[in-house]
Length: 171
Image (cartoon, rainbow, N blue to C red; front, side):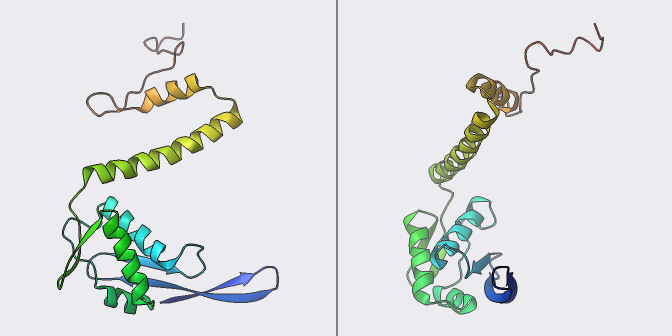
């Protein structure tokens, strides 16, 4: 448990808030921020999901029991139960009665969907920046072509039209 103090600039007072951290044997870290606008079960869900996607938690790794996690995070078992149910519903974990909850096998479609969601978020940011800078779709396409992997998986770094390297001469 970490107790942090944040100064409230509006009233010149100090507001304590607690960040609970679970760091178990399963190489899993969970940070609960009571000041966050997200519900605690959602914070747990999001962090476990992220650790599954990035490979920190692997296929068949055991999750801590709901009671153990609730005790360590100082939250209700109902909250951990809801987070685990959401993870199971989304296909990230499976539960064996009497044994516990485990990381589900790599679901290629699930990981692909998560990647697509992240790409969409980035593209939305690109669209906003491009509009603000007056960059056209064609120019965005050219930029993408510079970094998109070719059939070998290697990025293609091409020079934009008219800027080709002419053998090191300055003609």
